Image (cartoon, rainbow, N blue to C red; front, side):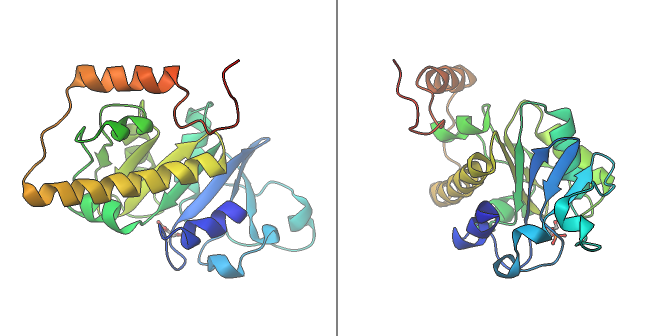
Length: 217
Ligand code: 13P
């Protein structure tokens, strides 16, 4: 719940757009549709199975509960198909969305692009929000990656926790801003595939992006 609120506080989201989910036993817990984050409480989160059917939860025992995010299918498909992922953030952050409106992903102009798991951050094709078609396009664009842009729509970031997924969504937005800024001088030169592989190895070796909690022994 705190992470859902931070989505707006961090500036990567506004109004009721964007949504957040986390894996639970038998399915996912997801933010409700069309409810401003500042009005949202833990009881408003919706528990669903992988087919989008309500899962019994303490909150729902007391009433009908909220309707799930219109993007529940995208969240459910990503969590179901990617067992290593625990949380999914979707938002309409301004600069990432600006690139996505041109159908442009983020290429290897900066080494930090590798935090999303590869040499680039892809942009999916466009499909109507809340559809299975959009979910399919997102799953494809996320293949081997932890983040992607959604054509004419926004971005998706994955993590092993809601906090990590949010950190990555903020990083994607920062990279999009840097890329747009660098592009003012012309299309920036790109780091090679080999260098991006070295960066990924270095990130793995230094546990880069895993947080400060565990110091090597
Ligand atoms: P929800 O309010 O249904 O989560 O939808 C917002 C959104 O971002 C749709 O893509």
